[in-house]
Structure formats: C-alpha cells, structure tokens
Length: 52
Image (tube, rainbow, N blue to C red):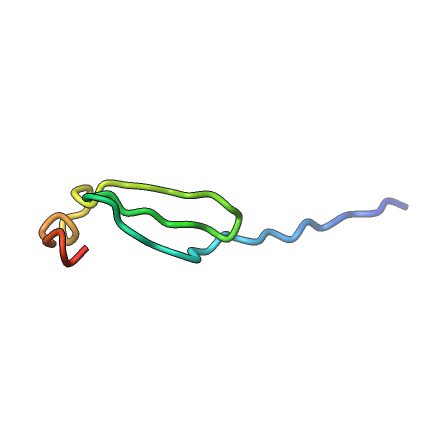
C-alpha cells in the first residue's frame, strides 16, 4: 500500500502595487516583486504619469 502526498498549490496574489517613473511594480504574497513597463499595455501607455 502506498501513500500519496497531495501538494496544495497556492497561487501568489498581489499585496501591493506602485509605480516608479513609468514602471509598475507588484509585490506578491510569496515575496517576489514583479515590475513591467506601463507602455507594454495599450491602456496604460495612454495614461499620464500622474494617472499611473
């Protein structure tokens, strides 16, 4: 008889978001910080610096 260990998968979620210049950063629940340029997305690329 074997024992099967089920590993629960928990997907990280954003805890905090902020911008620096035109880069958007997300801090995830697993500790990672992800950054991407606002100009990568059409809607964000049209936003003013103040709106970001």
